[in-house]
Length: 441
Ligand code: SF4
Ligand code: SF4
Image 1 (tube, rainbow, N blue to C red):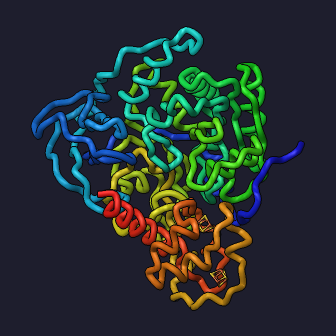
Image 2 (cartoon, rainbow, N blue to C red; image 1 turned 90 degrees about the vertical axis):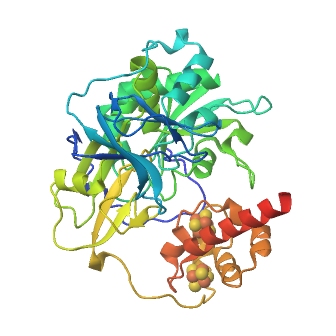
């Protein structure tokens, strides 16, 4: 079998054995849900409920006026206790709806539209994706209806369903492909209908043999193509995946639609299927609880708004002292200081690491070994970018393509000086954006 891949990248310890054999379990109802009104890239939502309101599961809680936004819904029936700023996994406190579940689980879903992609109106399906608050579940949280609305001069011919899950430790997508195969493929066909594509391709890394076996047969029966890629980080990055599967190069500063492609995560396709066929908004997601400090690593279907501490408890708790708590994977995830932060739409994993599992010492000057240059999948000069960031040479960084950095962390992973290249680049991107904004004001 020939394997598709890209230039650069790394082979970190994958540690997927911890959780990949664990079937998806459904987490119980917590005592309280904290549902942030920002869980996506784009304009925040404004609340449409008030403290004291009684809501049903799936009822709208907040919506944004802008096209680039995604509404949020109640993940359980119950009473709105408060609307207040609360902890958020991305850092800054965010206005959130605090809900006390009543255990009735009475639903207020949208009207089911049917499950035959061939008979569905593409515009109505896209509107449903928007109303259901679906965002990219791979972690990017870009509103899906926006991604599915390319301008007329950017025709899309191929939709790639991304099942690579190249982040170490995480196995939620792997289990989704195994256990929700039919819904995933149905969702992919619905997305294909919106985009009017000729080809739908499921792409999976070759370290998921059982998922490949299961999905391949069903995919072929549905007229969906299948592509097995090499296991390499960050194979699941959109630009890397398009290069590996189709041989097309997304231009610097460009997007997949510039080469006629849209890429979505497998969980997103399941969410689309449920929204269209069943009328269910995005109110829960599959995530992995894992790491060497997790007592019983596994995969869980969790209601949005559940405190991560409750998920960890339900998953069996921890072993010893947790030295590091990360939302997402070790490469692109975000370290947390509290178990109180809620699960949001973009939470792909809860990673619990013992203290000895990560480095704590500081970093050293660049020794110009070029290891980072060799692994950068977007062919940047990470060493140069990090030095320019330290010198606050923001404009120069733009010339060196800082905005093409996908923040994969491969450079920092191989750096013998342990330089925090990604943090420096992330901060620089914000500065570059601010400068641009000022210039265009
Ligand atoms: S510079 Fe950016 S894209 Fe390149 S390896 Fe580092 S984090 Fe990844
Ligand atoms: S890997 Fe680290 S030390 Fe080596 S060139 Fe890159 S930034 Fe410098």
